[in-house]
Length: 238
Image (tube, rainbow, N blue to C red; front, side, top):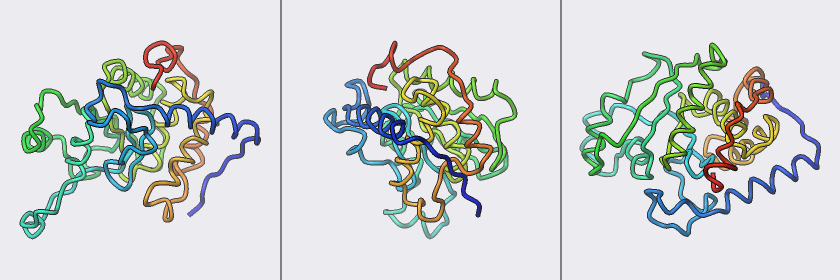
């Protein structure tokens, strides 16, 4: 498999790492559903092995649902990844997969919430389909995703963004959001931040980079902010 790479000058890498360390060392907001206000993103447990905290209000992950077999249903330790995300405080789900690409989980959200004692009315599901290993059909689609993430952040809601494997499409959206919210200065900066977090993900040994394809890297590198800086104006801890 071809691996897309990119290069940044040492000074840019150092600057990106400093800013990344600053926001990752911040505690989660007091209004977060998470129980320990003293935990930073670096020490906050990831909901599932193939996930990482991109910001205090955004977790990036792989597809979180798979129908259980009758045998699995009889095992008390068998849990859905979806349950782990809900238990971690996720209340906004952003699904980047195409219809019929995988078994849909949106029809089961209410039932999973009920099992965990969560009001289903508090949980939102958004589907913005992007073809696997491809780019969004339009910049307008990406802006719509940014609007949902902005809304979640301003309401102090934790969102989860995922595709199938949490690699290509997910990395693209996370990179754009890091630029959009002001954590990253530009797309190259965002890509380096993602690379650092991706090293900690379980599947990194099999899939060494996120996003996944050269065009996806270039999309993030070229992405421009719309002018609304959540990081500076709304949530300094974002």
